[in-house]
Amino acid sequence: MERTLVILKPDTIEKGLIGEIVTRFEKVGLKIVAVKLLTAHKELVERHYPADREELWVGIGNKTLDNYRDLDMNPKDSLGTNDPKEIGKMVRVWLMDYLMKGPVLAMVLEAPHAVELVRKMAGHTLPLIAAPGTIRGDYAYDSSYLANSNKRAIENLLHASGTKEEAEYEIPLWFTAKEIHKY
Ligand code: ADP
Ligand code: MG
Image (tube, rainbow, N blue to C red; front, side):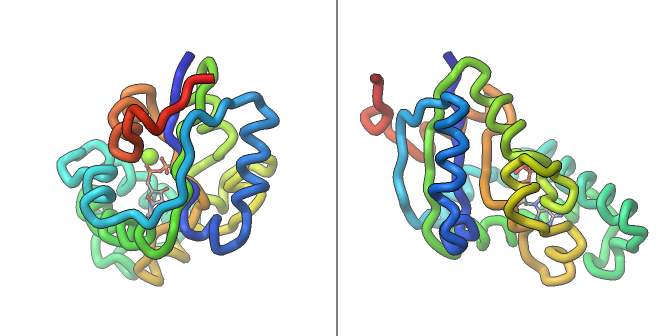
């Protein structure tokens, strides 16, 4: 058995898509072992996206540069830099604002291979290139270019832990042991 953290971000709640998305997880057989609606505070979001996780910010920067390349756009025009780490740090600020801008629905889902399964269902980080049939591909169209030109995070409906280790780090930030149910 494996557990993963899913956070339905404020755009999902605003669009009234909680039911649609939770239904998809239930249909696949993922078991909801914890769930709550909350407005995340700064300290929680800071810990969820730690500033010192270099590889995360460089990774986000590189994904952004790839998207600019695909669109034949110059990152310097909208971001003022083409250094992946600097871009990652810039995105971090927007990302924290995004997660705090309204209530989110946090969940712990359980199944064999839960992490990989949920990532597959979520689809690519950038809704523009997420495949149809995935959550991000079916319900959103945002891109790095659109988001970055407006100095905001990419609105892609949900967070899902990227690895088993990430899940083990993230779950206790959002839920106490008592809030996670066995059934
Ligand atoms: P994922 O959510 O697919 O695991 P990452 O962990 O790489 O993706 O990035 C975390 C979040 O940061 C993304 O879900 C997205 O909301 C936001 N984000 C990533 N890259 C950018 C970018 N270039 N501009 C704005 N927001 C971004
Ligand atoms: Mg991630």
